[in-house]
Image (tube, rainbow, N blue to C red):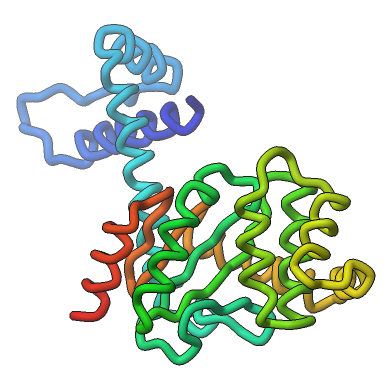
Length: 252
C-alpha cells in the first residue's frame, strides 16, 4: 500500500506542479499552494469515491514488474547460453552432438517433473537430433538437495550410469531420504560409499549453485522448466508440445 500511496502522491503532486507552472490569465486571482494535509485529504476522498483506482494501480505495477522480469530473462538467455549448454559437471542425455539442445530444470521430489519424465524419455529415444541438458534444481527441501548431489556425483563417477539412476529417482514414489537414495544408487550399479564420497566434493555444490543462479537470472521459480532455443516454458508439458517446440527451433 505504501507504493500505491507514493504513486498517487507523485501523480497528484505533478498535477499541482503543472497547474502552478502554467501561465495565469490577468483576471485570475493568485492561487494559494496546497499543503500536505490538504493534498492527503483530497487523495483520501479520491480513493474513497474511486476505489477501483487502487486495483488498477496494483495491476499496472505488477504488469510492469513482469515485463521487466521477462526482458531480463531474454537478456540472460542470450548472455548465458554457454552456461545453459552445460559444463563438465552438467549431465547430458540424448545425443551429446545433437543439433537441438533442450534444457530442463527439475527437482526429484517434484510431482510434475515425475509426470512429464516419460515424455522426456520418449523424446530423447525417438529424436537423435536432441541434446538433452539436465539442470538439477533442488528447491523442495533437504532431501531434494541430497538427491541432486547424488545424481551429479553419479555423473562424475560414471556418465553412463547417470540416466538409469536419474530414471530410478524419477520413478521413486514417496518422500526421498539419503538411505533410500543410496539404495537406488546401489541397485543401479553405483557404489554407495564412492557416491557418498563424491557427493561431498566442492564441484558438486558449485554445480548446484550455478544452476540456482542461472534459474534466478532466467526468472525460473519452479520446476519443471524447459528451454529450447529462445523459448522458456514453465510447467509440465506433453510430448506433442515438446515436439512442436523442437520443430520450431529446428526451423529457426
